[in-house]
Amino acid sequence: MIIKLERVKLQTRKTEEAINITAQVDEVVQKSGVKNGLVNVVTMHTSSGLLVTEGIPCLEEDILTHLARLFPEDADYHHRRYLDYDGRLGFNADAHLKSVIGGISCTFPIENGKIVRGSRQTIYFMEYDGPLERTYLVQVLGE
Amino acid sequence: MIDFHTHPVLIRELLEKYPNYERVARQVFKIGNNFQPLETFFLQMDVAGIEKAVLLPIDCRRARKDAVSSNEQVAELCRRSPRFIGFASVDPLRKGAARELVRAVKDLGLKGLKLDPALQDFRPNNRKVFPVYEAAAALGIPLLVHAGMSWAPETPLERGHPLHLEEPIRAFPKLAFVLAHFAWPWVWEATALALKYPNVYLDTSGLYYDSPKEFFQFVFSRQIPTTVIERSLRTKILFGSNYPRVEIKNMVHALRSLPLTAGCLNLILRENAERLLGLATGN
Image (cartoon, rainbow over the protein chains, first blue to last red):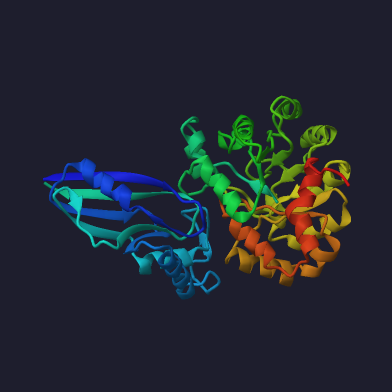
């Protein structure tokens, strides 16, 4: 059984963006040496997300637009208060809620050293409160 | 646009170089966010539409063992990018503080003075501090002084009362005093000082509850009528974010949500800072 964990850094450049990370995940799987198993991808941040959808710009825009409709920046959030452990106020509840509803991870099977996914399935890192340097985890398990 | 109030306390490149940098960020300044590469700082400026940012050190070595960013660290960052405008900080109760300020300005190229009476543990109306004000006035640099409440631990609230600054403000009429954070909660006292004294300015970097937009809309309309800013203080207010305690973009959006004219916003976001920093190109 092989278990490999890679921490991948990503510099986001906008307040919100959908970044296609499919090629980076493929590369980690190929380097791992795992022929059959699973790959799990997880973001390490609660104001970002990880999701799978068709890799086209119109959908990227729709996802961000409609998440913003569900969680408007100006809505009434309890999170807007001083967070003692952080030394600053929390006023990005909209980003946290987008992360909750959009999800933070995805899992795919690996067969013959390659991720098995549908031809249109694309893995996205979702920035909801950038720009920031972010980290996501790619864990490969198998043999 | 210029951000007159940022703290370079979470920069990865400095973390790797200075062993006490993390302790100071976590325990003295107190901030829990992740360290970020310098690139993030520039991107945060970009998304907010900010071209230049003032970097503020705080020399609290006597009071807190280490500086919250040193003059040398600030100068190092300024050498890396012309988008940064570095200020100096000295401990005004330390022997030779005025000379140290002169060196920081002349040798390191720093453009202003930053003091924080609460974090540095001194009284701003203490006569022993006056040689530092005198040196800053002689150098022709502005003084950005923390006023109002501080989020840093072990800082007495009373130390930030803006009326403690009235005596030095009167004694040094040629020194521009920029009172940070609009001196919240003493916003009327700060407003009165800015109305009364030509050498008093206020920065907008206050955020103590709610969201930046909610805070600004309360403080700058219900506490201080927006008309006071528009009509009387338009040349006395400077945009400051207090990044990284707040993201710059959120403070810019908050300021822009106020019913201020484009001319007034331009003064707050650019021209007042350019004038104080000697960046104005002239008419």
